[in-house]
Image (tube, rainbow, N blue to C red; front, top):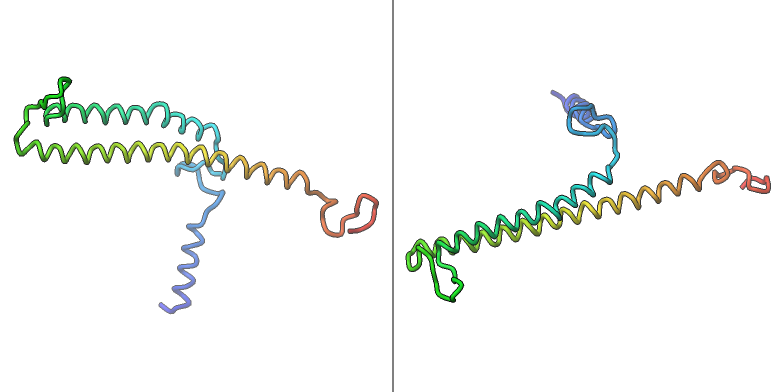
Length: 154
């Protein structure tokens, strides 16, 4: 295959993969370049009000159960736990520290995702306002060579 033939084939392949506002239905896209402010707002609210608190609750529940076995501090300040003094306790303590870091990383990520959804809505809305104002203020009189309000060409 010559260079020109390969170039033409690759160019044709790239042209068939490039789709902007023409994606067929059924591939997960809406078929347009719109955004749904309401959906982003609902997703952010779900993360903040439901998913985030559930993750924290589940993380604390698992953490509490493991500490009871490993030997956390009881209500009277004494060390309690079935594995107190065993080597397994050290391994479980390491797992608990890793668990705590992962729960914290997940809750931080969820908070960031909710914030990103809100920020995206703000940016899209602002961008739409700017573009809309450009359309409403432009017109035939703003075009080069169009008559001015007094009838003279600009």
